[in-house]
Image 1 (cartoon, helix red, strand yellow):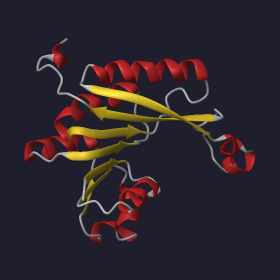
Image 2 (cartoon, helix red, strand yellow; image 1 turned 60 degrees about the vertical axis):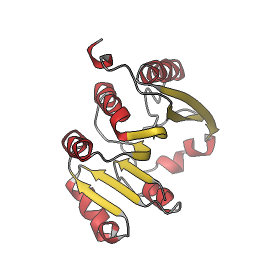
Image 3 (cartoon, rainbow, N blue to C red; image 1 turned 90 degrees about the vertical axis):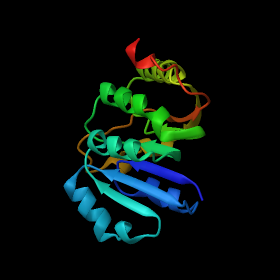
Image 4 (tube, helix red, strand yellow; image 1 turned 135 degrees about the vertical axis):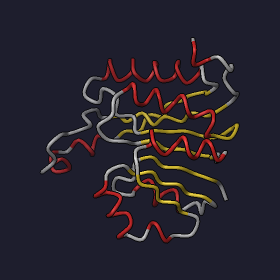
Length: 182
């Protein structure tokens, strides 16, 4: 099986999808204590091959990197962080992914303005290319997800566009050693 990591358990949807592929290692990093407790209550800490780690990714990743843990796939979907945080996460990816490994993330950058959403998408693509990644976006129509009943009771509607652009970022080559300094 493959080794995978999900940063941000949330409702566990991504982790259920990952488990359907029977990974040999499945690392989950969750920062929020209530969400972590919920994941434990659901038994994620007892599933074969799963490591449920509590903490901010900024605090957990250095230990994984130090141990030489590498993954075939990584998904990133954190809450209440900024683009700069995402960029810092991206800087760590070449040390966490095997060559040919795939990275994806919840593409919620500027979710209420298609122009700025596309600009962010291109910015991510350019920044990841400097780290040795090729990045493609697959358009997925999700107009039904915009129905008012879907968002009923939700304080902050976090998606407004009729199409979601699913990122697939593949590590093609290691970046130059001094890349972070430029």
